[in-house]
Length: 474
Image 1 (cartoon, rainbow, N blue to C red):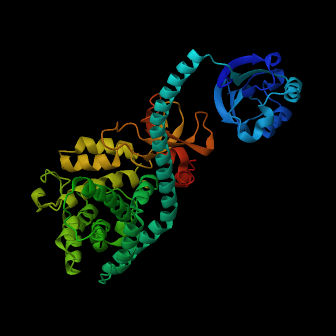
Image 2: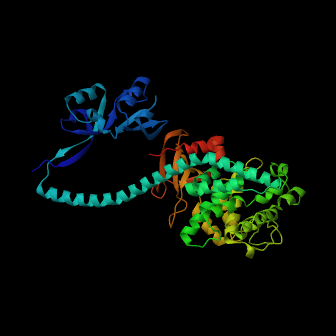
Image 3: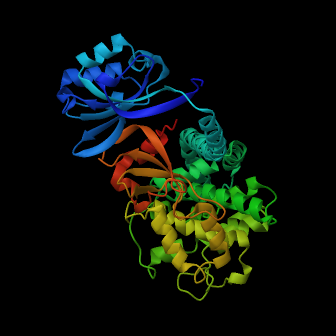
């Protein structure tokens, strides 16, 4: 017989330890480890660096890192010893003496054992099954690593895009102010459009649009533009649909300029935070902006596809509705791209408007638009928008069934359950903000679900975007 088999034993007493054993967990502790004082908690943090611990805190059993142990915690288990802590795991007389002194009483261990020939054959069969299982696990692990990579890339691009978004907003305002004075020039906007398409940052800027308040007309134009590009680009790639635009640059430029007709609206009215009745003089002036936009863009020599976006984006599927304007426009004249833009326009208006009206969360907005699809908006176009954005768009703040809170960072594709996106948890079930964040793939973690969606402003205040940009997944 050969010593070629490893066995594990659990809940062994200190007196049962012997040389050659390897401790895999400390599983029983004396009274000093109940409701830790300053000295013992510091001992745990210093001597068990990078280990995992099961503790009782606030009458609940939770898992933490040694560095997170606090005064008042009760230690139940220490495990996941890193390789540099062999002195705490390789059993010898010196370690046994130290454990007795430290009043650590019970252990999980592994050690070599001897096998008969029959047992070896059985073990080989077990190993074969384990290897097959490991292959399946490796696919899951690859999925997890890919999700981490995509999340970190999204956060990085979001950080890079904040200042760019601010600059584009200023550029749109400058262009509208110039148009108000009779000088139609959109060269600066074109420059930023080139940068967005080259850096593929529209997805990150769409997440910003779902988090940051933007009731201002100019910010609305930019946020509609990046959301439109994100959705439209995906639709073209997945469906093979032929675009009416000469390029993706022209597509996002058209979305940025959809409200360009508001350059003909007095600026004090445009920047007003008041709510106007539909029959009011002010609202009639505002509702004339599609016609103004179509004329301005036509005078600048822009193609019909760009003009259609500006002219028809408020025309409803039922063009007899009071909310459909201009009144002489008909839905059959509305391009596919403009039908998509109309959905994006309302989505962003509901998510982003905050100064005189409480905003909606992205998931609540998606539910509302779903109810209007087929009535006000093209149902087939809505389904494409929904597939790209998801029931919980990126940047949505949700509370999970375990009472933790996080941001949606990736949505399910294909035939996956749309109610189970990937969530980066930033606040634990005790209401504590985390320094190291956990990525929860609800397609895999079937014991967890979304309990409700939240308003990012109510949860994080004005710091919501900073919290999102501070997400770190490893």
